[in-house]
Length: 389
Image (cartoon, rainbow, N blue to C red; front, side, top):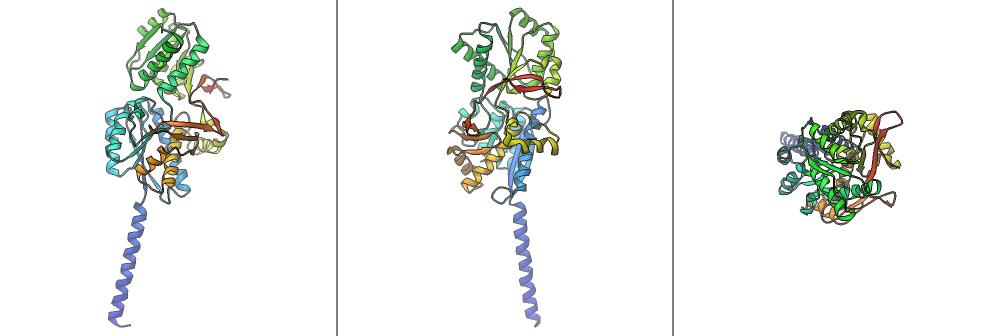
């Protein structure tokens, strides 16, 4: 071989190596970038852990099966600490990271401004847990939720209260947040309009309060037979504990904001007998047995409340992308708005034009968005929530 020929072949070989390196490098960077955001720290960290674990497990399972359209999911985590301004900052950071899809947030007050920022930056957002109606009433192209709404939950709670406490006195207390006050107001609205109930008491407390002595005295004077709580588990648990300490025996009834065992840890023995509305528990679906056990054994995490809702959000992104044959967030959103049915750990569901779940079924049977739970001792003696029979 002449020197000229050898030089030529070395050049071709080098070009081949360079091309292979480019291909390999492209493969490394050709990833689906997904963010999960929620209160990883702060008083609502129990719910942040639900979102984080749900998404992490879904990403691990999808990646193990080949990813989305042959591309692996790269996960980014953001801690909004239940603060709206911090949520917006996280979305802006996600923009810089190249994130195109977000699962979150938990708090409605965080999801509202965060979804606006996500829309402006062409990011698809699915919240597993934010229930305020305004989130989807804005009809943003990019914003969806796999949970129900406060007007659905508040109405369902009013129906239950009318059935169980007709003619009794009802006190309503909320935490003044977008979620808590919104839920309490929807509950009160349905009670007054449909059942002609007028609450014996309607009061708001501030997030972070610890001494509810004055409020408990008002509840006692009202003669309430039931206290409806619009808020989260921390203040709800403290309120219930102090009600019992001051001799108020009326049961507490809450919504999805208390769906974590930390509620029982805070309330202590007073937690037993608490009523609660939430969607049917996906852990009880036999089809989810293997996934639930994976959380328990591999992650040492009990997939309560919104854990599997977060898992389902990732499943939906994968299925919509594959149907659209595109990773473009807008095309995925169009597919989600099309009425397509998604097969998820929550069951089969589809979305309406607003981004709300329009159809929801498990095993081919339509399910109510909200059912009644009761906090009680389970088979192992631990107090938790179980569907009321």
